[in-house]
Length: 395
Image (cartoon, rainbow, N blue to C red; front, side, top):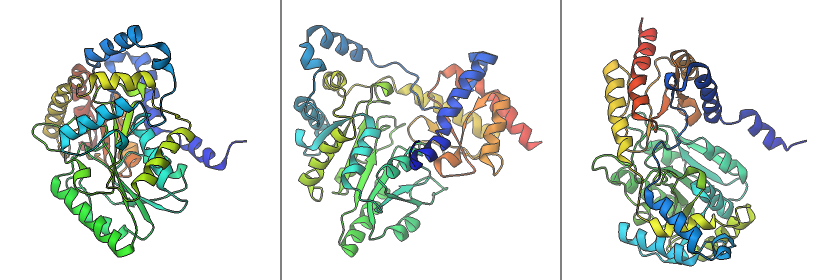
C-alpha cells in the first residue's frame, strides 16, 4: 500500500510528460515529420564541443577514484570556487567556494533549499503562471503554497496581489526569470519593487523571508534584454542554477546553489542545505559533471537557435491572429487559447498534429504553452497547422 500523498501524485502524474509520451505514439503512427511536438522543454541543440572534450580528457587522465568517488556533500571545493569566481566576474558579487553548493540540477537545488528552511505549515509563494512541479516540491516538506494571480498584461508580477498575500507565515518566495512558461523577464524595476515589499514585510513581521530565484534559463535572453542578478537587490536571496539549458545537458542533472554570506542565519542555513543534499538521497552532485563544469564554465550551446525559432513562430502566430506577449527569453511561448477551455483547445490541436500544453498546467487557464526548442524545420512546417486550427475556431 503506497502513502496517501503518493496516491494523489500518481493519479495526477505529469500532464506534460503524458503529452510527450502521446506525441511519440502519434509520431509512430503518422511519421515524426508530420507531428509538431511542442510539449517538453527538452533542448534541441547539441552541447558545445568543449563538453565532449572535457569528458574525454577527464576519463583518460583523471585518477579513477577521484573521478568516481565521493566528494564533499557540497561538491568539490575547486569546482565551487570556479563557480564563485565566474559569478563574481559576471555579476559583481563577492562569493567564494563556501557560498556555492553543487546540486542535482535546479530541481535538486529547490528541494534542498525548501528542506533546509521550511517547517510544516510554512507558506511558500509562487507567481502564476509558474512551473507546476513547484507544487510538488512544496508538498514534499508539508509547506503551504500561496499563489499570486497572474499579471496578464506582460506576465510580470501582480504586485498588488503579491503584497496582500505576504503574511507572518511566509517563509519563501519562488521566482523564475526568464520564465517558464511565458518567456517573460522581470525588469530591474520589477525586482526593486519585489525587494522593497519583502524588506517592508520582514520588518513588519519580524521574520526572515527567503527569495529563491530559479534561473535555468538565464543565458537564453533575446536581444539586449538585461536580466538582473537578484542577489544584488535583496540580501535574503538564494539562486538556483542548472546547466540543463545553457549546455544542453538536462539528463546529466548538474547545477548549483548560490548562498550569499549576507543571508539571514547564513551559516545555519548553509549547513542545513549541505545536510539536506545528503539526506534527500542526492548525497552529492555527479562527480564527473562537476569536473566538466569547471573545465567549460562560461561556455554555452548555440543558443541563438532559440531566438530564431521565436522570431519565426511569434510573427507567424500573431499574423494569423493569435494573441501573445512576445517572449524575452527561454524557449517557451504562451499564447491565448482560442476558447476559454484551454484543455479542450489543446485536445483539439492534436487533430491538427499539434502537441501543446494547456495553461491550466501552469495555473493560468485560457492560455497554452509552446516549447519551441525543436528543429527550425518543425517550427516552419507547423505554421499551417496553427493556421488551420485558428480557422477551425474562427469559422
